[in-house]
Image (cartoon, rainbow, N blue to C red; front, side, top):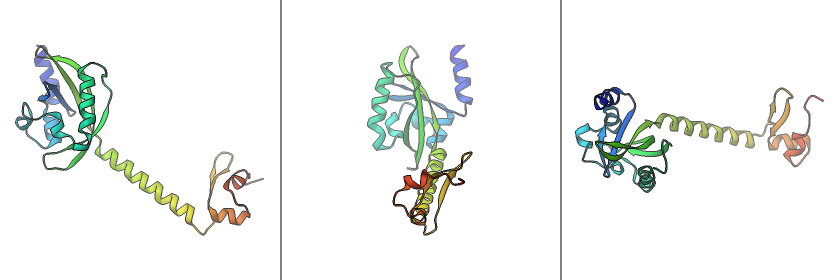
Length: 178
């Protein structure tokens, strides 16, 4: 009954679920197979976890799996770059815990596709870098004020020149409306 419940929950889950035992993937649900771009038959019993991970992340993966198998870490998420069957890279966050599967120790866990989050972070960083470059190199005096006091929190070189000072701290100490 418990095996039947486990299968029903995992088979229908939108979250990628895996079980590793003896260095091989002995169970993957349909969501994991789809995320990796393989059929389940191509994975189960044939592929090891490192076959689905970017080569630069394999050492960290093996260390983490060893720690999980030894019961040293449980449930903590670790980010990796996964490699899909077509060679494309997907960013994943893996969670896992030591368990018993069919009477033997195993690591069971979930994978969350964080590729879009990583893309959004990269876009945000690029946007922040562009803003910083524009702000710092503008020939116009530019300042950043913080409500509710409206004190200066940043000033560019053109602002320093406008105030006739050489360091930003002098400008930042000024109260703009006094």
